[in-house]
Structure formats: C-alpha cells, structure tokens
View 1 (cartoon, rainbow, N blue to C red):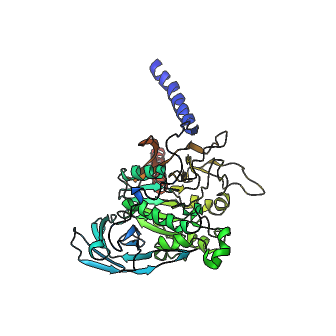
View 2: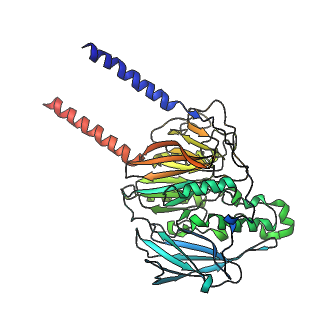
View 3: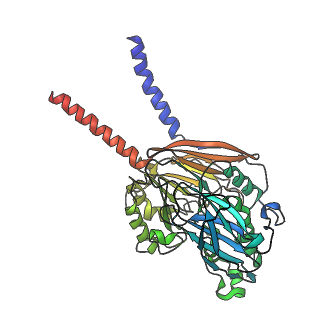
Length: 480
C-alpha cells in the first residue's frame, strides 16, 4: 500500500517536471569559430568549368509537375547555343528516350548570360533511377536522378532543408554535409548565390560560379526552389547605367524554373507540388499576399485542394520567418502572419520552414490568432493545432551569422543557435516523421536538435477516434 501511495505521488511530479522541461526554451551557447564569411575565390576547384567546347555546366533539376513523375532539367552553355535536348533511359548509357526544351538568355549591365536551357522530361515511372545525357559530341555530360515513389499516405521519404547558402567555405561545409545525409530532395528556403553582394558584371559571374558550386548535388536530385530577398537584385546605383534592365528577380527567374502552372499558380514565385506523402506549398515573401491579391487567392484554393488521405504531410516554405526571436529581421514576417496564420491552423499545416535569419531556431506549436488591434491576447499561446516554425537560414553565406538573439527567450521559442548547418525531415509514415538539425562543427556534421514530428491531421484524428471509443465504451458500461 505504501509503495502504491509513493507511486501515486511520484508520477504527477515526474509528469510536471517533464512538461516544465519541454516548455523551457534553450538558447545554445555554442560559438562558431572556424572559417571567415568570405566567398571562395573564383579559381578554386569547386567552381571549375567542365572541359570541352560548349560543355554544359550549372546543371540542376527540379520537380516538373504536380505529382513528381516529371523533372525540369536545366543547364548553361557558353560558346554557342547548342541543342536543348535531353537523352535519357533506365540503364547507364542506354538512352532510349529524348525530350526537347527551350533556350533563353539575358543581359545584366555589360554581362551577357550564357545560353540557359530548360527541358521538361515527363511521363516518367515512379521510384525509378534514370540516366540522362546533355550536350553535344565529346563535350556531352552524363548524370542520373531517382524519381520519387508514387503519391501515397504511408510512403517514406527524406527531405533536406537548406537556406541562405551562398558560396563561402562555410557554404561548402553545409553542402558536403547535406550530401552525406541520405536525403532525396532539397527544400530550399531562399537566398541562393548572394551574387547581389557584387556589382555590375560580377553579379552575373557569381550566379555562374554558384551554379557550378552546387551542381554536384543539383544535377542528381531535385531542389525545390523558393526565392529570398537576395534574388530581388534591386540595385539603384546601377539603374542609370542599365535603364529598364534592373527588374526584380531577373537572374533567378531566367535560371531557376518552377512547375507553377501545374498547381494553377499565375506566377513562378509561388506554387505547390506533391511528392511521396507530402504536399509542399511554396510562398513568396516578396510578392503581394494580402487579401484579393493573386498569391492570396491561389493559396486559399490550394489549401482546399490538399487531400490528407493521399498526402498526409502539409509543409510550407517561405523565406521570411513567421516567428523569429533573433534581433535580425525581427517581426518582418508579422504581416504575413496576420494574413495567413488562421489558414495554417485551420488546415493543420505540420511545419513551416523559413530562412532569411542567419541562424537556427525552432518553435513550439503556438499561435497568435486570438489577437486583433482592438482586443484579444497580445502574446502567442500554446496551440496544438498550430504548425512548428523552423528557421534554417544558416547555410553559410558571406554576410555571416546573426548572433544576437532577443533576451529573455520568448516562450514560443524551443531551441535556437547561431551556427551554420542544414536540416533533414524523414517522413516515416502518415503519423510521424523524424526531424534533425545538423551543425557544421569544425568540419564535421553534428546532430544538435532533433524531435519526432507528429502529423497534425492523422494524429488529431487518432486522438478523436480514441476519445470517441472511450466515450462509447463508457456509455455501454453505464447502460449495462
């Protein structure tokens, strides 16, 4: 009896202590002291130009349709246009199929881009390895990619998440560590090359170097693109030299296509795809998004198209964080939060990934939808229906880390650290996924923050079914 009494006293204490520990946010004291935040010199081997006349370079692929059995293959040639043709097949060097695409180019001050090729390869089989060949003659190059499994509720899949990458030695560390992760596709949350940190012709040159820098990953697996502020390229000092050539997102839009038409979007800046068991929505922080705008109308329609019985996992990518406790870019996401947060909660979004802040931070499930300008609670409160918000703007770019967090740490912030790294999200089935954030520590990948992410739709349905079952069983016992 005494033992039972002790257990009854002990259990509430353990539970209370566990809850208190969960709610206590952590600010890591780790200090990064490895490589300076400067771009790698252009003569470094990571920017090497492929050998041969007119050899394709800057090869990258992204998803080409809504459901994942198509890719858009892109590359650049410099000596002459060459052909916009992809040969491909299911065995090495046996290219039984081909697809033709289109070529584009652009100018930026006195910089002339190479010939940029984009080819849609569709009608592919799911969960199949394809080999492909681009270019002509002895300068042709060969690569491969793996299509995702067919859409389904319990299809496992592993995503990498990278943001604000740039082309420094820290960027290289992030890229190489990511490539060891076993992830099958990258969700990129904006700010690619940081070429806008340069001037005049060097802007285009640094877009080219970045394309070669990431090719060892982007040529072999889809990177799902979203744009950040460093893709805008608003350069007032250049306008007097370039007249109408300084247009927002000019370099980005010419180089990095998205399958926006497949999700009925009117702009490549916002779109959606389905891949394996995930429905991924990409939003644009730097395009109009308030009520009645095209992006807002599209998002409302796209959220209503989500079928959680086919794709249980609902993931949103947007460059500017909705919740952020760093001094850098603090509250910049507030306007989008005011417009979309209720929708995110109503539709049970599982996780929202952002970049922009050059640090790492993860939130608890919280919301601030009860507040308005005339009444309501002023602060975010715990909300089991809300997404987890994760900032991964820690890819390694030349602007360096955002090392100053607000003090005290807000209640909504679960973990934060000013270090470089990348994340992975490994979906196991319809109910849970494993999340990891990996720090670049002295040239090594070190797993720092991890947790099991429970699916908002299926977990809540399981809870509801259990409550209903317990209720019905209780009613039967009363009736008997």
